[in-house]
Amino acid sequence: MAATPKLVLASGSPRRLQLLQQAGVDPEFLSPVDADETPKKGEVPRSLAKRLAREKAELALENVNRSDDMKGSIILAADTVVGMGRRVLPKAEMLDEASNSLRLLSGRNHRVYTGITLVSPNGSMKHRLVETRVRFKRLSRDEMEAYLASGEWRGKAGGYAIQGIAGSFVVKLVGSYTNVVGLPLYEAISLIGSEGYPVHFNWTNRSGV
Image (cartoon, rainbow, N blue to C red; front, side):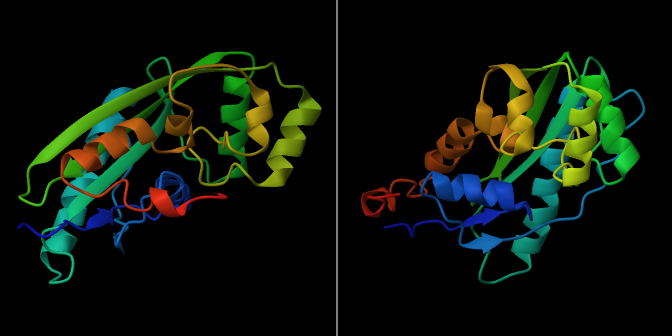
């Protein structure tokens, strides 16, 4: 009988880990990777999300293959990109990046893409791309200034976190909410389960959650 595979999450994002744990999945290993997330010339948001998920998976696979404990594990890698048309909005680290993103998003539609790459224990890869359409309300100057002062935007694609204050900006959302948070759970759990990972194992102990 084949041993049950272990799961490696190739991300340092607390949001992705929390989403998996919300679904009853607790990865055995965390293997954050440092990929250059700079878009290539002319690269559109959906292509960037797919490429970065693949590159993160490849980097994580190198780490896994160097570790006796992790070798033979399932690897889950993902990257989330906020786009407006062909334009990629940055993961805001500076105040002016967040401010510019908010002005662009105010009163308009945008799209959130998450690329997922899953590496099976034999090294083969599966890829998914999930798209969610989001519309923001028109933000007042006071709302923008207060949100920027909150600091919630820091390190977030498009300069906002939908699970925080910015959730009150959303007029309409079409598609996966968890995709906008950072990991579309339906697709992620389906991929993990398809490799024989026991995604239901902890469900029976979650009464009262």
